[in-house]
Image 1 (tube, rainbow, N blue to C red):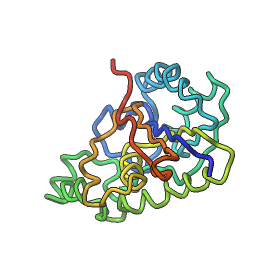
Image 2 (tube, rainbow, N blue to C red; image 1 turned 180 degrees about the horizontal axis):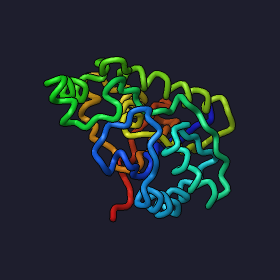
Image 3 (tube, helix red, strand yellow; image 1 turned 90 degrees about the horizontal axis):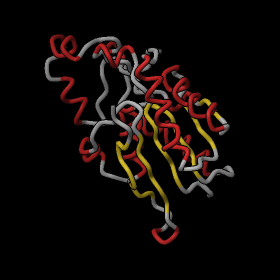
Length: 204
């Protein structure tokens, strides 16, 4: 077990973010703002001196990660287990459209990590597959890893790694585009994960 720090980095702004549509696992593209957000984040994230960057295979995350790895020379690995939540038939819809067709369901989805949209997956399921990536890194010579992924996955994985009750996951706020969260382990705390930063980033 060598992994001591994880930086969970959300991708930059996409065309779907800008238009207020639910992305899920649709492969949306970074806007020019999103590309710039990734560039601005590089010098700050470089201070964590990661040994490896692992990115979701969805293009918005892979492109964001590539901005960092191209600038720093850190190795990049792609892992589809870091994909965003599958939102089923909600993907591509606006919040207003969902509320009109499934009154009250979006609120349930936001507050109950065990609930899944029609044809989609729950946040508990997302955390389970994402935690496999962390477990794999634990068996490798990696001390600090950046996981470049998605907002919903970051929240779910954070709740899971901190061993929070599932009912408390909704207390974790959302993650801004190109913002990050940091979890660290300490030998003195039995190697349990501790939250160091949450939704940190550069605005503007």
